[in-house]
Amino acid sequence: MCIHPAVGPALAANATCIQLLMETLELRCVQESEELLVNVAATINNLSFYQEDGSVFRRSRLTMAKLMLKLVLCSSMDAVLEATRVYGNLSQSKDVREFIMQNRVHQFVVTLLDSKSTEMCISACGVLTNLAQDPPNRASLSVEGATAKLVDCLRDFGPADWQLGGQVCQALWNMISGGSEKLLDTQERESLLEILTTYLDEEEALKWMENEEKRDFHRTCWELEFLPVAQKLMKTLQPPDQTA
Image (cartoon, rainbow, N blue to C red; front, side):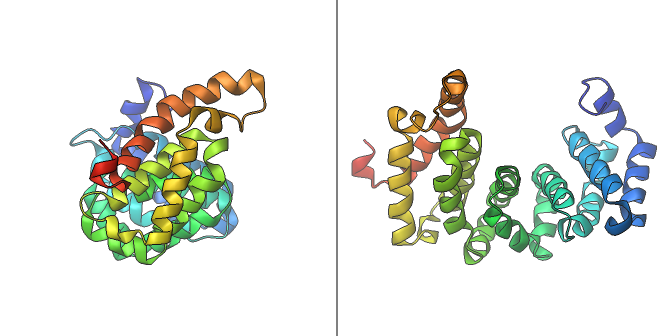
C-alpha cells in the first residue's frame, strides 16, 4: 500500500499511522517480534519517500532514527537490512546525519560493507553517500576504513551489479571531493584507478555477463547507473593534465 502514489502520501501524512508504527518499534523486542518489526521497518522505509515539508513523517524522522537503533544493532540480519535502508532515506536530512555520527552508527554501517551481501552493501552505501555530504564526517568515515572497504566492494561486486557499482562510486566521490582527496592513500588511489580503468571499458565491463538474455539489461545498467558517476570519480582522481 505504501508504494501506491495516492495511498503512500496519505499514510505518511496520517499522524495516527506514524504514531502506531513508532509505538510498535518502541514497545516490541526483536527476539519476540522479529517478523513484525522487520515489516514495520520496511513500511517506514517505503513511507520515507514521502517527506514533504511539514508532513507528520518529516517531523518524526529523528524519533524514527532513534528507534531504528535497536534494529541496526540486533542479531537479525533481516532487521539490520531494513533499518539500514531506513537510515539511507532518513539521512538525507542533516539532523539525522548528525544523530548517526554522534551515536556512532556510522561505525556499524561501515562494517556492513564486509557482509558479502549485495543488498546489505548497497544499503550501507546509501547511508555513507549521504553522510559524506558533510565535510566534517569524511575524516571520521575514513578512520573507520570506509574508503578502503568501498574500493573492495567495487572490485568484488561491480561486474555483477552495476547499480551497486554506481552507488559505491557515488559514495567514494562524496568522500574524496572538495579537497578531501588526501583521505585516499597512494595504494587505495592506484587500486581504484586500476579498477575504474577496467570497468569503464565497455568490452571489459560486459564480458562478465555470460547470460546472453541478461546482457542488454546489464549493458543498460552499466550505461545509466555506473558510467556517469564512475567517469566523474575518475576525473576527480586524475591530475589535471590527464583529464583534458
